[in-house]
Image (tube, rainbow, N blue to C red; front, side, top):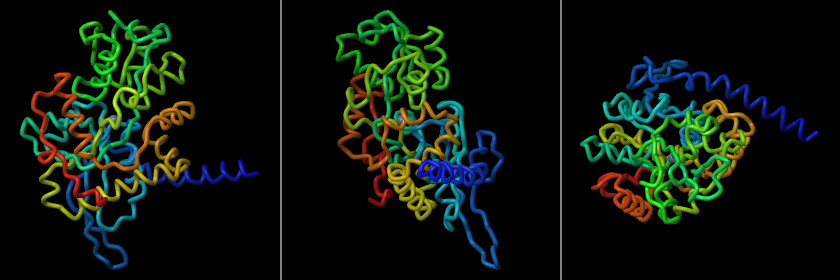
Length: 332
Ligand code: ZN
């Protein structure tokens, strides 16, 4: 009886979400929506709503953004417009050219853009932990990867750092294997077809390989890098300066969405399924590895990240914490 009640409640939530999600999840890189303010008149009342355009990739790592968007539909001050992209380069192009106000993105890509003169600010973490190193079933230990092909989504990524860290701990170097960049969605199939022998990438693509039984977990990220930083919510600094109230609202509600995920698994699973196109066997595993509370970017964790980026030659001169991180908007 309890199960039936739970199922009925779940369906009701899904139906309600399907109605609301349809309005935002369909936005994509070709969206024609006009940025800026939107005026709505309800019962004679004029309300100025700031439209905030945030780009994302459909990955588990962006979940706080999806949840915030769903929870904030009735927010009188801001309207979050999510803009979906299919790859990191496309997303970064939109961010760097000001077509969006911000993004949930691999922090290393935003740091690189910052060093190239794009005035971006990282305002919160995308998630905590939540990466795994996956290898084909024939790989018994890390040394078996010698001479094999290993995929990462981008050299400027924490996935590349995790790979380098794993090799270092097993007395191997990056030159011992063939490293290729591959789109996250392509990785599980490439592993299944033997085109690659392992990969490290944003979720849910590690969980996909494991649930399909074509791959296994060699390492979870905390085993290689404690308190790792991967994705961040990044905003264009011009947007922050011109819209301090909206920026504060966006980021503080984002943190609340992160905390909400840990307390409302059924509701957030429904949102995740709408945005991520994952089935029931993949999502629980993916969610097991990740958390979304305490999304502040601490100076200590950032220093660890920049040290690793220099050690593994990802970026010679990463931006300083003071220049790149704006912790003030989080409201914590
Ligand atoms: Zn991430």
